[in-house]
Length: 412
Ligand code: JHZ
Image (cartoon, rainbow, N blue to C red):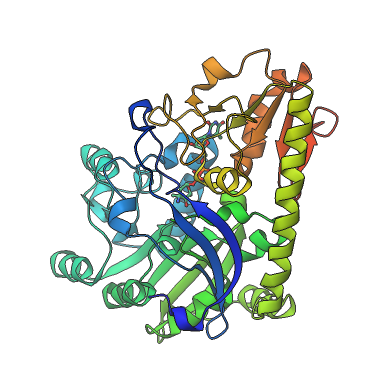
């Protein structure tokens, strides 16, 4: 649970809707739910969190829009990590917490894995494919039930999920109680180091209750009889960290890499509030600059769209008050986002086939984390003089002269 009394607020991202609340045309006149998105730091455990988490039952419904398998990049990455984990740990039984549409679990033998996914529309997809998926929230009761039915678990994997669950104590306790003695918990979530470096304040939205560091994960794990023994930086979702945890007395030794990365976090003062206060000042500047870029282009009658109706862009658009005055529409490949409107700012969302037309001059990179995949896909747009706008790591315009080859990096 978030220990509110101890948290020092450092960033206010204003009134925000739920990032997943894409609206149908008929709902546009209905009152939308808004909350205040503030971010804070707890000096006791170095945890960065939002201050008022929403009720998970309102967020993870049977209308959940995000599909992990939509992206070629993510399908490839989940395939690679599945292979790596099977080779390294040779699990008999694997459990995935937050299986979405099965992008990870599909790489496992159906008889040797179980999945947990509270969004019923998503759990139905993997159940249909024959992967036993419990459409429930991960908690003490579910872990007890699974343990009774299947016994202890050798490998628990959870990507972009643990950071979404407000009650960290119950989450880790339940994992600890079901993990076999030498079992391994592998977590992937956006990393605070990248957020600070890239000014990616859009990683904060209602679902991202926490943005972890090694320090904070380590502190949370200790309280539940777990410990980190390894970690690796990965470029998923704009920069994430993969943490490997086990029971306190398990056989795994702490790796050198973990020690080095932990020392780096102290060196970069991730344990001090001053670091986060400096970041907040940069975000205010980023907002001003992005609005200026869009205003200047609109004054020149340029057609600007947004690329990817991401949850992240909900934060940007509502914080910067970017609406259809600036962006004609958003394009997205996800069928159940198309023909809807973006949360809060009500920008129409259409398919890339309809929206990536020859008269588009600029595209804001809502899905900046997939920049490589997008630049490859949109070679023609770039060739005919189309340009991208990004806020990563600072607001700017990039075009053909910057993205010269496939090795172009939006950020280092
Ligand atoms: P993407 C979601 O965040 C929500 P979002 C969640 N809370 C989370 O943690 C992360 O995912 C993991 C589209 N697209 O993955 C597809 C194109 O249209 O960055 C997606 O709608 N064309 C669970 O929403 C969106 O962009 C393309 O070529 O911030 C990407 O969303 C590509 C590559 C993507 O996650």
